[in-house]
Length: 235
View 1 (cartoon, helix red, strand yellow):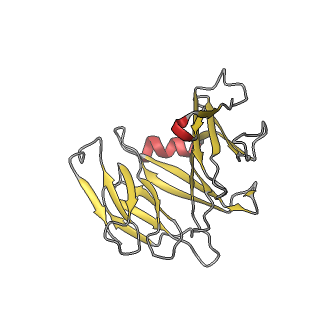
View 2 (tube, helix red, strand yellow; view 1 turned 90 degrees about the horizontal axis):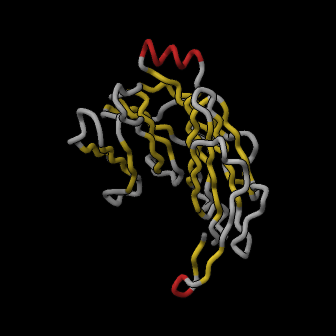
């Protein structure tokens, strides 16, 4: 349900189609994907436990704040948990799609049990020519440490090198944060630009704290032995 206009008196209802009976989680997000001033809709539904399926659908709003029954873009991820989110990676005022996923494979299970590590997959879909391509413009695997508690792996986007494009920061190890920046082709490189020694089990947020033109990173730890600490990384 959308409420808008003077005193929020106007409203519009949109029903998400699809069979949600056997799906254990459904999420929605509103954002202006194509920079036309209207709220576009991203829905994420997931089902399963060992054989997880995650469906991400993006609906571009029309002039009447309506959405077509068929999504403008649809991505189906199978065999692992996938977390999609929208961010302008290349500074073109359009929102690109970034998907973090944790594939459930025999190798990943063995790494988790024996080494307390897991393979993290990062994919990006750039918004070009009015939509997203079916194949990702960038894909990379990062081996990350796993917390023995419930802490999450730090992950954030920001312009850390000052080129105007959003980079990726990910806690590849429990004590080091890897920064991946854009290469000559405009896509995120597969090798880390910098590796910073910091406790990475926690939640990362980015902002230009010192007005230097580059984003900084703040990591706080809601759980674990570092929960009384806040770490700041300045670029």
